[in-house]
Image (cartoon, rainbow, N blue to C red; front, top):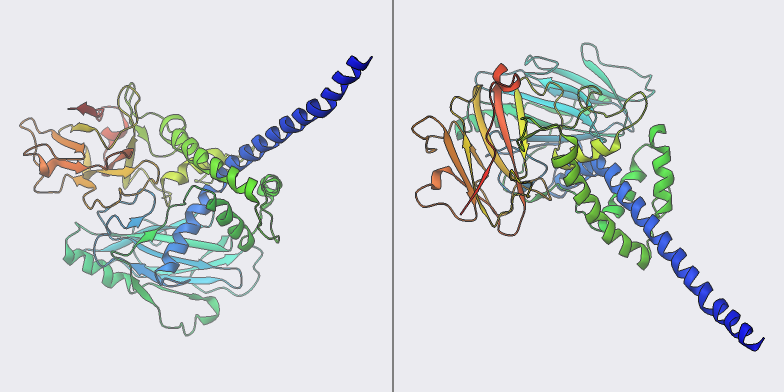
Length: 465
């Protein structure tokens, strides 16, 4: 009997503590899973928030216009920008009243094109030369939901579902020489943004040159991302479609109208979860969701299935595909509603045997002769984790307009990638960062039917010594 009591005592003392430990481990795993899902769901709005905050840190406030007096360099750290045209940026808020945006008409040799977006990166409309006003210029009024006040006669009017909104415009110029960039700057300084109440007499605009400034626009995927999510939840609306997610956020310490006070355990799990969420998004975007462009090759289209069908919202009648949307906005900063007509991009992140492209290795890409484009083609390198320019590297693109790029005798063009250029091939070389993974976007500017009907194909990348 004494022996039986002894074993019972051991079970009570140690068995129950083991059960408690198991329960705590299970709770921690659930916390981590929820934190990963939260980061995936929040990626579109975090992409916007870090973009807005980076502009704000560099002196660009609400209703200001930021421009680049030269083509932006690697310090513009946002998702997959190009460096063939100087970007223009502005953002606004309609919580208190509608906002008016005036865009100028195209002028000789220069126009503007872009998309108005809300804070979840849902397109409001394409604007400018290839958008709503078709280059004629115009006034746009953006109002909050349930607005019943005055409007502006003759203006295009839109309802915005979030408080915050933004736009990334691209000047349409023949090439990126300084004369054309200067024309773009002059046209940019005709943009006006102001509250509707100032329509009769707008205040003087503030235009900010952000060229060569550090713009850290990509979300940092560590424990700090959860603080960022909490901050943005406080300033934005919670739509009905996201109520279930708000319940999940509450389980990991993120709640509207409540303080964010993570303890040591929560911070430890946040730090584990955020990088896992990033790796998941990378894998989903480059390997799972985007359809392959060519059978048996590693080039994929830019966007997951469902973008055009849902007008880039991924809001289907039966569900909200937050997974596809999160993956998409890991990789791009803004969508274009008529993507595929003016430009078309394809993505490559792997070797033919399925290995991530590594900046420590050397590769070559043979671009076929006679690429079917009306304007030109370009290939650009990006860091795999940030989806932005590789840091401290100014040369990130080669395009068919570059005089120094050498063609082969058969009309093809061989482009080299690696930490050091092959001897005598410097003009056809794009540098990479040792120890960092990278990927490519190939852009067709003015794509012709052969890009889409299967009669033209890009080659896979080849690893070389």
